Image 1 (cartoon, rainbow, N blue to C red):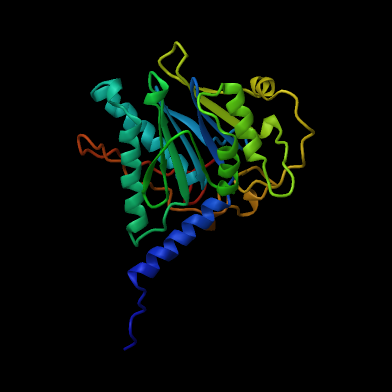
Image 2: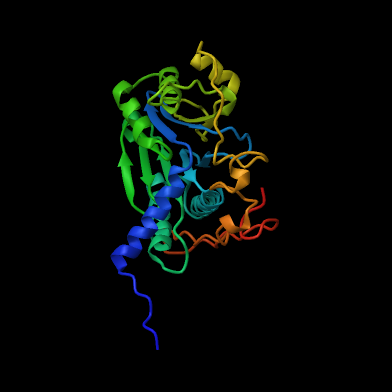
Length: 297
């Protein structure tokens, strides 16, 4: 009788962490910056239908990088948890910290279990307060770790290079125009020559505390973005985006977010998010039909 194959727990966790980090690094960076009137999110995203930045609740936004089908399932589960808790209790009981804790529990459980592969995602959960001192940005990694970020944060892609550029030019309490220009310049910054990213290939959204509506999330349209950025140099040819799932792009040939490749998908099931107050679990998000093991897009 042959001896069973043995891998030490330390090596198993290291292999799972390396696997998740490589998948996340294939995507393009997402930047979040605090400015005087709220929180800005920016990312290079040629797709007009697949969003990396979305609204979760009145004052809460969600941003992600990595596999689209995985973080989209997490976003939907978070929206359902927030709606259920706000309806059962009060809308003020829905907080960014509570959602970040729920996401951390889910990601940590998936990462430490040996039954399924770890999620190749990193998340931002941000909430604005009545003043800048009340703003909160939580960064969640693939293994469920939570970090409270201040000022700015970057995840995915060449995050170290982008974060270094922002750190050198960041100023507290800057205007929205300055924050947008800084974020877009950082996303196009490279060691060789800085790229000028076309506005149609940018996804920019804000949590704006000055809005009169209860819902503070809004997307910045290309027309407004052009006004905020002002005159720039000519655009450079775009490289294939591994998160762009349109036909003929890198993702459609088996990139990290390719919904058409059944060998490149998870089961489509996401573990239910548990309410940290009541202990009740949100029903899991069922996979949609159309693509084996993943949502139809």
